Length: 319
Image 1 (cartoon, rainbow, N blue to C red):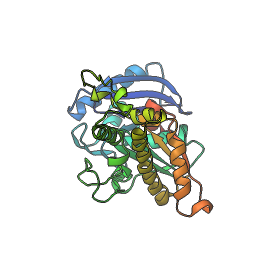
Image 2: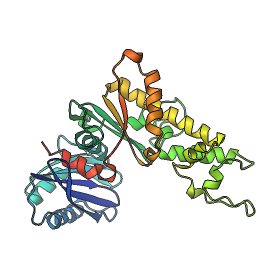
Image 3: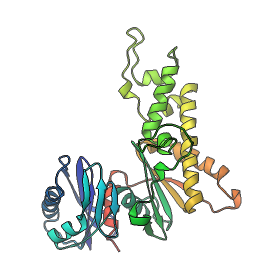
Image 4: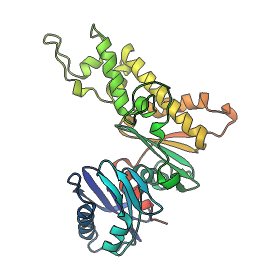
């Protein structure tokens, strides 16, 4: 049997025809075209599903959507990216296609996809932490999504790891997101460079610093810069990278102590750094509650990549 997985984003809507084994048979993408009426977006999705699945039968549709999604009742209560309020998305798609439809938050479905078909497929209890512009997350407990009341839980990025710390976009200070996101890593790298008045850090080379013109392209500083320079012995960059690892590992420890997940899966561009998981694992092993005799939790890197959204969405309806 085949299933359709849909990942709705603020810029694009990605979709795929997915087999019962989680393998993508066909995929497609259409533009969201900014904030539009939900019915307009749904109409475009339905038309693209029909085009993509032509000649293929499918059983049901799973959808991942950003924002506050009440998966029990099939309602997108609020999605700031789409500017949707109280949208009966499940009902709209089901009526338009005649298929069973299940929706959930996009980070949650990615967690389910990684557990069923990705890095966590050997485990029943996992946590996914996504490290991007912000820090997202999802939890799978006994093979099922754990979403909290009205599906509004699992906001690991907005747990505080440092009281009165860095300002977070949510309005609080010291959130995990403000220290472990790629945005936070870039902020700290740039801050360290600004304090490096003699321009000795190799991070300056990373952004093309011209010593004679004294110009550089700050936009070139990304999540790789500090780790790249640290590998070459740059002490300033090493401090940035080490601090980032410690902050990330502290957040991971909070997740482990709350859920005792068998595995914590890290996703996002920052995870391309090959030393990330081993270093977080080392920190977690040293400080996890219960010490060496406590339940061992494996720190893994997500494997589904850009397909996590569509495969995860399909996982909502794959038995």
